[in-house]
Length: 197
Image 1 (tube, rainbow, N blue to C red):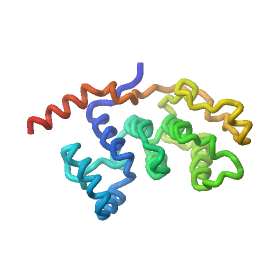
Image 2: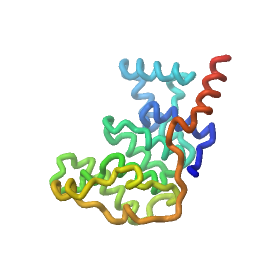
Image 3: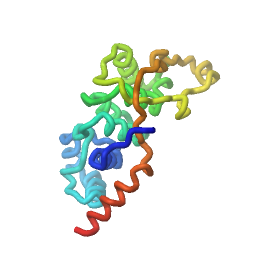
Image 4: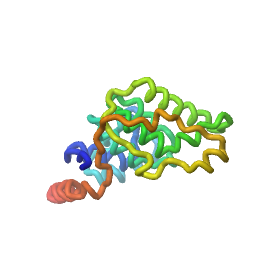
């Protein structure tokens, strides 16, 4: 049975995920200086019943499970700013790094002629850290086969891509619940509480 976040953990992670993982307070404050971003962040702050300056950033997350939840809800069209912040967080678990690798299609950037060198460097560093045991914990599960993220052999051959074998190694771990609907009762209670204010 997947591990569920507490209500407090979920609400922090949900808020951070809705904002697509703003890395830290300095980035948030800089975004608030931009009129267009301020409008967007003001909209979200109203939806989340708080001041724009108080929105939750990746740096504010307080558990490896919260980081994992946020990582599973990123909009990958926004680039690697949020994934870099998650990977750099001191509580980032190896399972969350695996999720970032597979959701971000890190294998796609294993080709020597990859035009997106920054992406290739990010994924190479992620694999190196995983290989060297450089994460604070190795306790969150991520199965790329179950989530259908492993590319087929034809795709790998066609592009000349390599999959690092270490990313398939198993270790004792716990699945973290990342489906938002599993936390609907938390959201309903939170919204009801704010509706009374």
